[in-house]
Length: 280
Image (cartoon, rainbow, N blue to C red; front, side, top):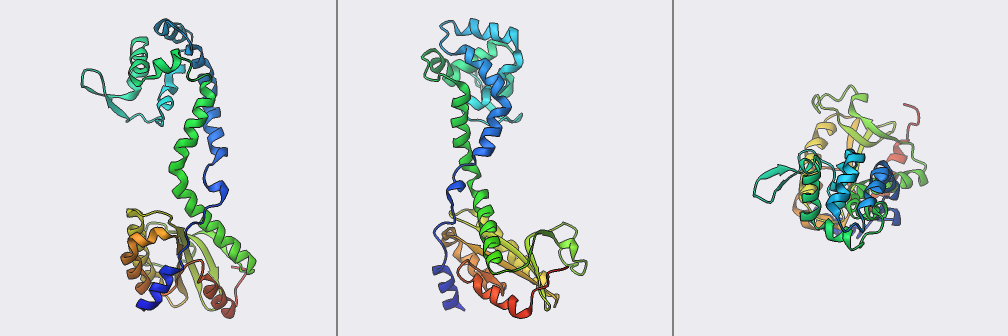
């Protein structure tokens, strides 16, 4: 078993990233579009020598325009975001957007004042577009999982495997072992012998999430496999697992059907022999 696991580890892919993995421009454009009018109004402040007077004029015209000031320092709107003010008190960030004095304080202390006065930024819509691209890197981990799901779909499609996606375990009333919380599986495949409930993921980098995932699936697999007509399948890949190989090895010894993208063909051959059911 140890040698088999070593082979499994050696097969893990360096990446599953396609070019659209790196930046989700559709989401970025949508985020910018939602606040573009306010950003365009804030453009009024750019190049103004008397910045406080310009803030006053704009505030009198439309005080709500300053609600988007947080994104200018790359912070997502969150009513619970806190900071120290200039006298050492902890205050909510959004309290800076409630008066001319507070707004001016915010712009001065964040460093935006010099940026505005020197015209280092010429258009806040374009500037925020760039910020959104930067913030979007935080979403790449999720896209890695989505890419894995898409890759597995393509492999199944090429092999002419009938499957259903995003299937709740409640569809199978025989399974009583998972408790009251609804468990959604990435894929489900039914053959004349068994129904396979499948989870997929891909980890490029290390992190606590890997240990949690391995532990969770090690717990789920026996609960499903106790039913003769059901089996849990885990398809995972990515060299992020090198940092959590001990936990992965534990899972490898507990979960009979654990595959990577290299060994997935074995699963496909197995279910083809069992004959896949296309109507259920």
